[in-house]
Amino acid sequence: MWRKILWENLEMIFIAILIVAPIRYFLIQPFIVHGSSMEPNFYTQDYLIIDELTYRFRNPERYEVIVFKAPNHQNQYYIKRIIGLPGETISIDDGQIEISHPLKGSFILEQDFLSNELKTSGSLELTLANNQFFVLGDNRLASYDSRNWGPVERNLIIGRVWLRLWPFKKIEAYGI
Image 1: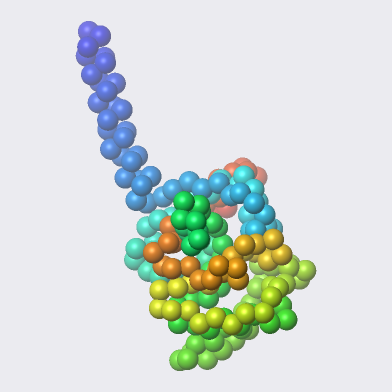
Image 2: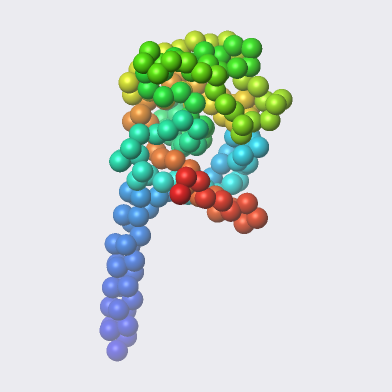
């Protein structure tokens, strides 16, 4: 009798692992925010679910918030917002970001998600290769980002922020 109960429990655990493991390792992944670089949109200890599947079918898009392996320390993960896309030239001057593309022309980046006092500091001009993205934190004054270590290679991107689960009063879905 006890062997049958034990066997049934082991079967249930095995089936649960077969279902959960592929979801966890190939579709979604949890991520906890550390640091203030994405404030006021994401805060330390926000619990996020990262969508790892979407970018297998399409490229990342401007303004999406992504999680990626840090270009300079690939055992660390960063969360930032995509500002520049492959093939574009990014120019930062006097708090404004200009994006230009040889075929699509140029424009000043709209940054409605930032408060007025969080202007982008520094002066920079950088042209992205075909597999590179320019990322910035939303808290430009406290963000360690592409202004410091350059563009992010496509292969370092883990996925996009899909869902905030914690804190409960701030549960929110992104890009669904």
